[in-house]
Length: 128
Ligand SMILES: [Zn+2]
Image (cartoon, rainbow, N blue to C red):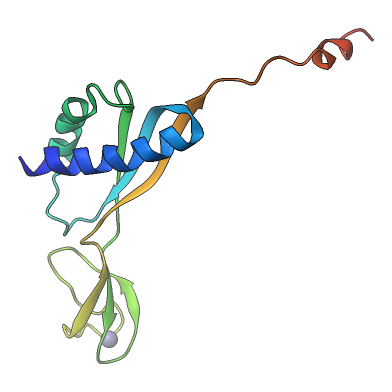
């Protein structure tokens, strides 16, 4: 299953970060391009399976959709395009190169880090 292996790769990446900061993963934010071939729904279903038994167990996967962007070979303009219609937004030419929209990116990881030991000085300011 394609989406499961993507989740496993994602979790391997965030587990490294969690390990470095000695935190527990609470949420993973990723961005999926409409042309990446990754189904957000399947990815969300596969995530808990891939997360089980890892540092990401019990965390949420938050997905965002990346815009499709093209650069025009005729006029040089860059802009957003529809995933099924990669035309230049400025001149309408179809000689465009895809800049983004076919990738999947890890945006950020939310970690829960154990609080440092409480400081005694925090109590003093309340007596006024
Ligand atoms: Zn153009």
